[in-house]
Length: 260
Image 1 (spheres, one colour):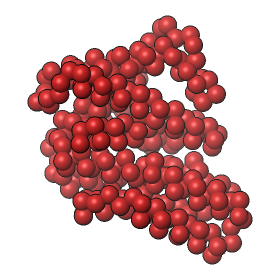
Image 2: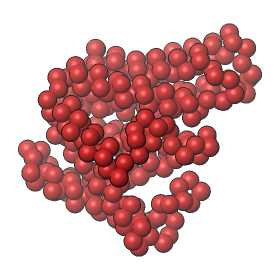
Image 3: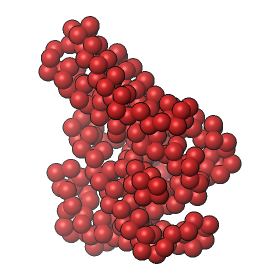
Image 4: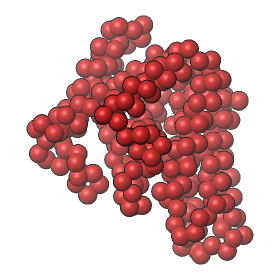
């Protein structure tokens, strides 16, 4: 019930931000999502001491990527990653971190910039060069995919998809989720102004479904490595924000490059 109530509160907010908020406010919301997600990622990848300096550098780099794109129209991933690596190693030298810990921090925190900062940049780009309806299309396909996978998996799921990563997910559930997402995509397109040939629409929904499943499993790997059940507790009944956007993080680049 808590999950349902939270969803009923959040969905109207999402729709308002998508269709009624100015681009600047949309970008502010996107940056806020990136900020909270990076905080949760930092908590999951923290090792030993609090490593506040590493946390700050990861936050700044992860937020700089979408912010610079909004201000300049350029996705500066490669130079930003080089600067991030330089600063992370420098921070480790200054703080006297153990070599093994420093290597672990540099690898994981650089991953955080790519894992969260880059997809949020694509989200902003789709809003600017595409339409809000396109973003809602992505969300609908992902939401239906997740729900269909859950119910199909509960009903007929037998073969485990990745038992060492997520014991509850089944092959049957994954297939059911992808099929549900494809159906939802066709229904959504039918009632909106988005125009795509059926074959292209089918391929796009299929790719989004597969990317969403991989994104979900990728976050499960991060949580399992940290020994955590959820990425946080900011959303009542749903865990952390990263738990809610894990599928979207991998599906956004698919939609971005497909639409281009």
